[in-house]
Length: 438
Image 1 (tube, rainbow, N blue to C red):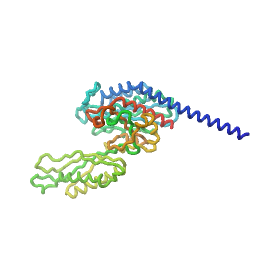
Image 2 (image 1 turned 135 degrees about the vertical axis):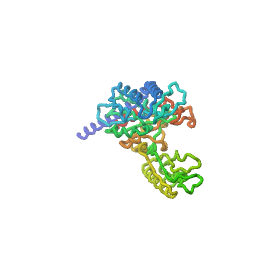
Image 3 (image 1 turned 45 degrees about the horizontal axis):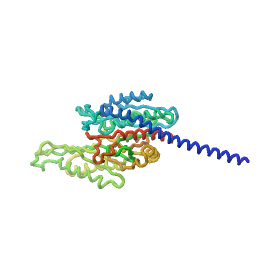
Image 4 (image 1 turned 90 degrees about the horizontal axis):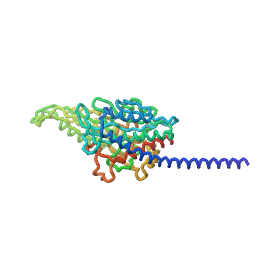
């Protein structure tokens, strides 16, 4: 008889658990419908924020008014706000009051020294100072949209505070495009100042002008490359161009060095694993056609998608340059600077698997697209070195525009369809709540 009552009890508990699970699933469905409605109602404000920021862009480490605009809004939401982080950054905390993880969400703030060519009613006519020169300023990479999407997510997550467990840290980061000469900035400085202390995970988004609105692109592992600036100084012996045998020619040495560098990727790396790039983009040497100069300076960029390849390329460049220079009787110095050097933007595979349902929930299964890695770079990677994090690409291209006709990033003609920002808001919200509840 006791066994009978025990069986009845277990069946009742099982039924109760099933009902609770069903109700929880239904609640999640209702929440998603509610989120869709909330985002729809909020979009006019998100667009308003984006247009204000687009019309009033500021360069790296000079985002003073941008920071004030964002901080005042976040304070109105009742969040705990810290300013002047990494010079001009803004960090806000939403505390649910319940135990749980801390989820960080990041948007970049800075614009570029570019004159806007698109004739928008909210186009930029701003000028700023960049490395001692007065230049036009434009949001030509979508950072204005990133800030507006995160502001929208802050509003909705604050409204859904009862569904949160733990804390949300909103990071508005300056100087993603790189600090001015002789300055520090960006994600690396934020990390040094402790922004990632007690954070469990971080999510970031980047709008893409070549991807249809409504689509989110993802990748396990390296999604964007590391970047290291390269400088090579070749020193020879100056002579009259009519008597080259009296010289040690740094120009012909530079030509040999450039050709030698191309064989590092093509002949020393396993390209089936990951792509890499060694590009020489600048050559300076000499000032007359009949003088062989004493010095030539080469400048370029190194891009890799894993640390093993990165270390190999660094070693190989020094080895090749020194050997070639020696064979030409010249001297050479290799500088791989660390002041504008970003690690690989790396999506932890386990976290990517865990959050894929959130992407599907936000965009729909057909709009969640696995992509190959890109050799562009992002200093979001500094945050990912501290904690597991995900970096995703979302569509900003109007559906009626062909991909080959869409504007490039860092271009005077850069343009995005503002309707694509709604997906960014949903992704921030869904990933945060789902991570907390898992």
